Length: 193
Image (cartoon, rainbow, N blue to C red; front, side):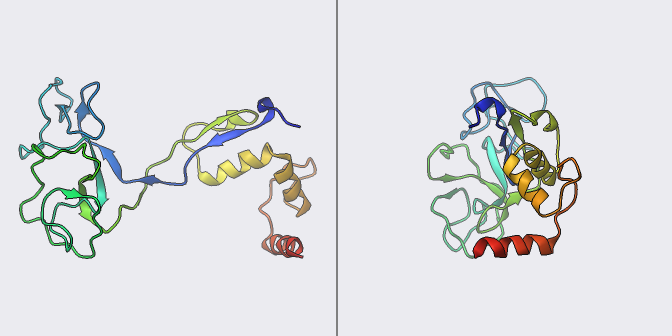
């Protein structure tokens, strides 16, 4: 039986998304609301933050997705509302929508997107990884995701035993070799029988 003290707990994600925060919001600025604060690193303001063309903007937006402001085959040009499943878009003829009188905190408001796509995609940001327990000292900073497998394998007896059984361990029982594909397939076939 294991206790919480001898179990590695690792929490992470497999990808990011294209969501972004815009500007420097005042403390307490609604995360789904319009940005109040400053558009740069200047003095904070209780007024709505404005882009370089004078338009207010939401705290959150996406680099891509269905919230693009151009007309689609489902909704006219301007702010979009859920459900919005477009199959075709037109260019935004009038630029970004004026959000001054748009309720961006409405549950059906679709966050603005810069690139028109039917759905938002994964992003390329590094994702956080947190760990607690044996081996957690090896988890720090920015790590390649394949290194996380090795942290887990070193701290899980069952995984380590399976790797050693297919010849991936050194003489001390430490998984150091990449498993041979043929041995993995043999093991999988044996498990199916």
